[in-house]
Amino acid sequence: MAEADALIAEIEVLGEKLGLAKASITRRFIGQEGVVDLVLSALLCGGHGLLIGLPGLGKTRLVDTLSTVMGLNGARVQFTPDLMPADILGSEVLETAPDGSRAFRFIEGPIFCQLLLADEINRASPRTQSALLQAMQENSVTVAGQPHALGVPFHVLATQNPIEQEGTYPLPEAQLDRFLVQIDVPYPNRATERDILIATTGVQEEQSTNVFSAAELLSAQRLLRRMPVGEAVVETILDLVRACRPGDDTASDAVKASVGWGPGPRAAQALMLTVRARALLDGRLAPSVEDVAAMAAPVLSHRMALTFAARARGESLPQVISRVVAQITRIEAAA
Image 1 (cartoon, rainbow, N blue to C red):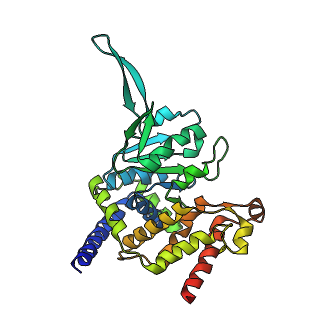
Image 2 (cartoon, rainbow, N blue to C red):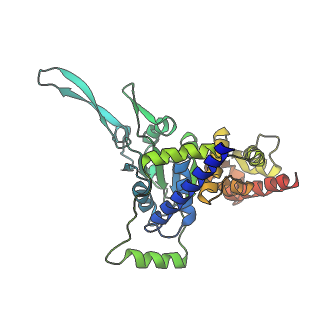
Image 3 (cartoon, helix red, strand yellow):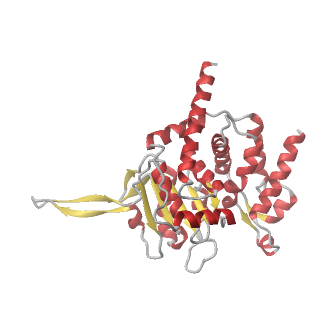
């Protein structure tokens, strides 16, 4: 009982601190609370986020603000077609000592940070994109056969323009699966856009303040994994992920006709973590089935693909996922 009380107290303290962090972020990244919550969820879960939105919506500004608020050492890499893996990871150079001896010395690239902004990630070649695969999964990179540990914690927030696809390279499935969530950044509504105009075109702009440190973020990540998850939530996650796989017996005829391939076990793991983060950001002590429904699209949409026939019919993955969520939650409610 004492252990449970201590856990509740820790969750409540962290919830208050997260409220301060959100307030500090939204002083510079005005409105778009849903986007802020998803990015914070990715950091709380120890994962990576893919931000998709048109130019000028503040994606780079958001990541820069996060570095300040969360107390992380940030770095930015502009992905271009001529970018090479060594430009991200670093390289070995041959140095000559005063005594004439020669030895290789490793010079770290920008990936050796705690929060990496991979700006317009799909503009780099597949060879360069793949340089992030090991880093995003294992928090280390291998150069010239030697492993090198990255910063702790280590997060990648990548941006992508959904419209301008000329001269871009689609992210491979293995790369997409390493992103915990896909975060769609929409246009702001009129009231929010008015606030942005007033706040950003004057003599001075609001500045964010530091709320977390790297050590405190790591502690929050450990605490999140200790949050209890009810059996109903676990079963809903399993039902949802399996119902989105066209080859599974539980998949509906509509899913089999529309989905080319579905989410793997990593998607279920991502849902298990992100529903806890959503509950924590909302000031609750445990996640609910509603959290699973809310996190379904951000977690699953980049881990699935539509068939050609479904695309020709004008279907979208959010629509398919929404139908599956509605079906699963009805079944859970009836049970």
